[in-house]
Image 1 (cartoon, helix red, strand yellow):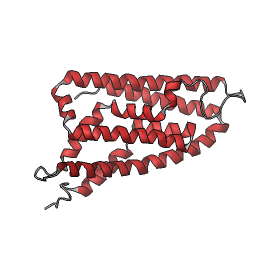
Image 2: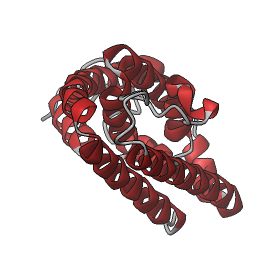
Image 3: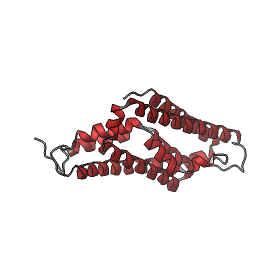
Image 4: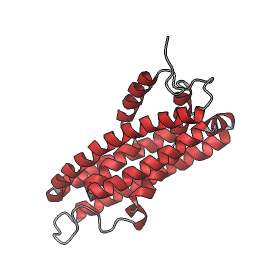
Length: 222
């Protein structure tokens, strides 16, 4: 018989499941890695902070039942889904343009190495961009509510405390994982600084993945 801890029925199963899910590649982690590779540790953590805030918002909305609302009213889900797909597509196209500019200026010693001088100003706000990527992910909202509910004891008198602990576990796991990605990104940055062809190729690959995420999200169902 499982013993509940602060209203969580099987905390270790939740921890293992959360770690496994966080390790799966997604647009959030990929964006943090690419940001750190292009712009360093500090900016990488700014992007990670956007992910953390976006995730907390999704968790709160999920606990409040917003995800169930998306299930009950498919048109709302469609609006969020296509908005998210459009934004991910926009990110992918912008990265492709940045890769093309970097390729064209690969022999120009005056062009900055780690950040594209022609990068749109809107993409120079990694915190906001990462938060939007997190928030415009309806599948994540649906996942949070379905995953969390499995581990919350419905008889526990303070369910908010249970959700808070579940959220903290998820966020600590995310902090550790994104920190590894950020420092891996700084290693990649050192390689890209001297190899602009490699940088352009890597950016193109990341852009293609974002376009893939966009298509996948656009075709997702409730």
